[in-house]
Image 1: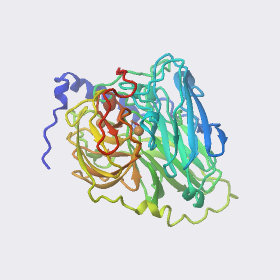
Image 2: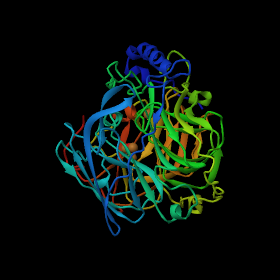
Image 3: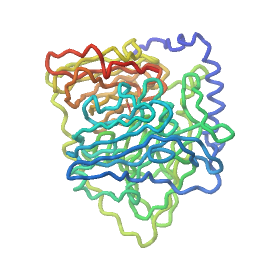
Image 4: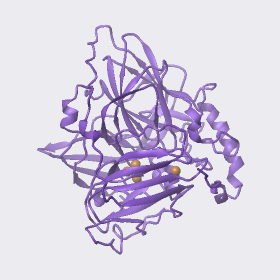
Amino acid sequence: MQLPKVDRRMFFKGTGVVVASLAASRFLAACSTDSIPRGYGGEPRPLPIPPLAEGERDGNRITYRLNAQAGQSQILPDVATSTWGFNGAHLGPTLTARQGDEVTVEITNQLDEMTTIHWHGMKLPGQADGGPHSPIEPGETWSPSWTVTNTAATLWYHPHPHGLTGLHAYRGLAGAFVIEDEVSDSLDIPTDYGVDDIPLVLMDHRFHEDGSLDEEDLPDLGLLGDTPTVNGITNAHFDATTRRVRFRVLDGSNMRFFNLQFSDDRPFQVIASDSGFLAEPREVTSLIIGPGERWEILVDLEPGEDITLRSGAFPENFGVPDDEYTPDFGFADSFDLLTIAGPAEDAAQAPAIPGVLDPAARQEPDLIDAPERTFILNTFSINDQMMDMQRVDVVIDHEGPEIWEVTNDNSDWPHNFHIHNARFRVLSLVGTDVEVPTEGWKDTVSLPPGATTRLAVEFGYYPDPAWPYMYHCHMLYHEDQGMMGQFIIVEPGGQPAEQLGHGESHAH
Ligand code: C2O
Ligand code: CU
Ligand code: CU
C-alpha cells in the first residue's frame, strides 16, 4: 500500500521536529533498561488495590457516590505529589454492577475546575455518557442513571472535558468499573477482589525535582511519561496468596502502549478483552495494550518464586520508523511494572482453566445490509476534520450493527480508535506487518501506521437527537488536539437537534 508521505509535520512547519526527537531521546532514556526510572530500584512497595466502592443497593438499584477531589499522594517513595482522585487523593474506587442493574452515580466536583466523567465501554443513553457535553462545574453534582446491558467485562471511568481529558486523567481521575453477569458467575476463575482478582491500572508520568507532576505537553507526544506506575505508584510489589491470579489490566495512560510479558517469558492466558470474555482462553507470552484498552489475564504462580510483569520493546517498533525524524513514542522502551512473589507452599492447587469462557462471544453480528462508513485518521484529524462540539459527524437512524472501516493514514504515527456506547468485533486488520491482538468484543483498537481495520459495531440503541456520543483516538493528546468526532443515534428517519447537549459550548 502506498501511504501518502506524512503531512503531520506541516502542522508545525518544522518547528517541533528536532526538539521533539531530542527531548524524546533524553527523557525516554530513563525508561530503557540501561537506566532506572525515578522511584524504581530500592525496596518495592505493596501494590495498592483500589477499594471497592461502597454503593447503596436496593434490589437491582445501586447508587454510588464519587467526589472528584485534590490531594497529596505518594506516587514516588520519597516525596509527595499533588494529584486528583475520586473519594481519595489519587485514582478512584472500583465500581461494580451486575447486568440488569439500574445504576446511579452521584458525582460531586470538589475540584476548582470543570470536569466530566465518562463510562468507557458502557452502553447507555447519551445524556448519561459523560462526554464533553456533560460538564460538572466546581461544587456541582451530576447524577446520571442507566440500566446496565453490558455483559461481564472490565470497563472504566475517566474525565472527558474537551481539550483537557489527557491532563485530568494524568492527574489521576480514573477508576475501574467491573460488570458481572451469569456467565462470569458460572466460570471457575479467580473472583476474590484484591486477593486473586486484581485490577492493574497502568499509567506513566513525568515528575519535577520536587515531586510535582510535570504537566508540560511534549511536542507531538503530549503527556507521554518516563516513569511507569501501577495503581498509582512506582516499583509496586504483589504478594500472591494463590497459585492463580487474574489481572484486569487497564492502560489508563495518556499516550503509552505497553507490551506486557513476564520476566521469564512464561505463558499466560488471555480471558477477556475490552468488552467481555473471549469464547475460549488464548495462551500468549506477550500482549500489546494501548491507551484505553483492557485485557484480563490469568497467570499461574509457583510457591516461593519471584517474577516480574514488565513491558518489553515492541516487535518491529509497532511499525513506527525508528529514526531521528519520528517522535519517540516509547515502543523501544522496556521496563518493569510489578514484581510478584508466588504463594505459600500450602496454597491450594488451581483448578483446570475452563476450556470455554463465553460461547456467545463467538457469534458474529448479522451484517446483512449493515451500512458502511469510512474513517481516515491522520495526525490530529479524522476524515480531514477536527472536533467541533456543535457539528454532528455521523447520524445513525437504525438499531442494527454497522461496519466502520478505520485507517491510520499516518506512516509514522500510531493511533487507536475508540467508540462510545458500543462494542465491536475486529473483522480484519491489514496494511501492517505488526500483529495486533484483536480477539473478542472490544471498544478500542490499536492501529500501527498504515493499518486499516474493519469493525462490526453494535451500538446501544437509545435514540436521542440532542445527546451525541464520541468516537476518537484514545491517545489522549491526539483526542485533545481534535482527533474526535460525534455521532447521534435517532429514530428511523430522525434528524439531530439544532442544539447539542445543553446547547452551551464548553470547548477548552
Ligand atoms: Cu475512554 Cu471517549 O473515552
Ligand atoms: Cu469511551
Ligand atoms: Cu492518535
